[in-house]
Length: 194
Ligand code: HEM
Image 1 (cartoon, rainbow, N blue to C red):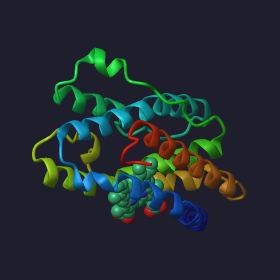
Image 2 (cartoon, rainbow, N blue to C red):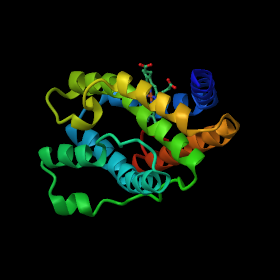
Image 3 (spheres, rainbow, N blue to C red):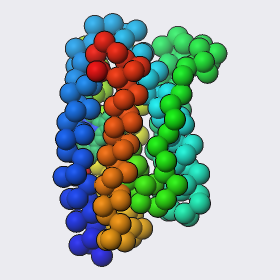
């Protein structure tokens, strides 16, 4: 059913283009970072969103027996903060977001699309951060292995998992995820991501 994969992906790509661009604009300041502490605030804000999100996704993946494993996310964010000198207690005290509702299969796949896709921009962000700040911990943004290959694998899996008639619901879930993340970042990083 490659045709469905192509059309599902195309549908998602087109349907979330505006949301992606808005978030990319909000995060553009990552290319102009002037202090490691500002970068750490970004890691902390990402952690507060990703940790509850991953728990919700894990539960739904298990409930739907979806053949997919999440990429390391919150663990890498915490590791980067620890390496930056944060204590475990300070990390534990960070605020956490309310995750998107990913209980239905289309919502799960839509949210996974955004999570997996977000890793594609990580290489660029890693370069920005390195150019701006030198050697700071970047295990989250650098990711593990070949993110593009991983993303292709995700798309093939989504093709098998989702009925063509659910493409709309998948797209709506992807946009909700984008919006929630953008709102979370605007609140957590008010002076730049607004
Ligand atoms: C400054 C921040 C960001 C930059 C510079 C960026 C950049 C990119 C780039 C270059 C790609 C295409 C990669 C490729 O085709 O190889 C991409 C794809 C994607 N990004 Fe981002 N991104 C950013 C933030 C995000 C965030 C925060 C999310 C989600 C929360 C996200 C979600 C996605 C998705 C879903 C795709 C896949 C689109 C598709 O091919 O269907 N991005 N991004």
